[in-house]
Image 1 (cartoon, rainbow, N blue to C red):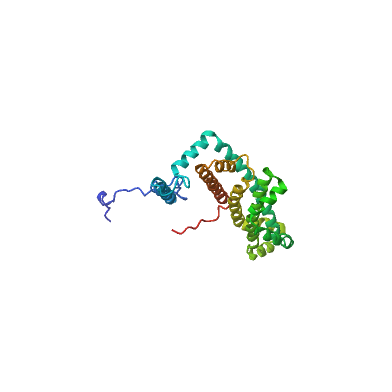
Image 2 (tube, helix red, strand yellow):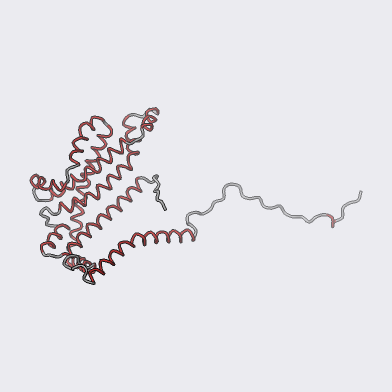
Length: 295
């Protein structure tokens, strides 16, 4: 039998290295450059779209004042209001007024929200609570809090107690209504499943009902935060000696329309800041809830 020659033997080729076993780790800590660029572009587009309408309104307002369509005594130009802001900052009135007004609003909001939360949980979890508190609170809810100002002056005088009491009374009902509705809106099947697993009534309330009602409770807190500023505007008309309301009263006596509008804008900016804070609280407390927005 003939032996194969050396030329007939194919050359030796080393085998391909075997791929590493296990998952391949990919560094996803940093998004790709294109993704970051798209995110920045989307954020810039949202900011521009939000600022478009206010910018147009300011432009129309300034043009109407410039061409004499609106009298400056009735509605000063935005530039004059900006000058009024600068005057308030230069004299230090604005820096001292904002903390005072915020303290009143936050104290009244904290007391009212705590009361509304407790009453809402009590009326929502127990039938006796609903029978005791729901009907009286529903009747009191229909009374405008501004109509209570003369009565609060009689009860608490014209000091800080009347102002805080007015804010307190105005912020109870949004938290109460949303807490009560959230507790009563819990799916009965969840409660039945918790009973099957042997949870006590206390654990069902703490682990099932309150977490499920939390989105509604936070909506009530957010609404109450806005109501606290509305009540603050009315409360600071009660013989105010400090705060933004005091600035508005002095400006009204001196016929300074520009300062009056500047004070109103400060109230609006405080409302925006408080609403943003409440949005952050909602996202931190409800990280599992998706935000569905139609394109």
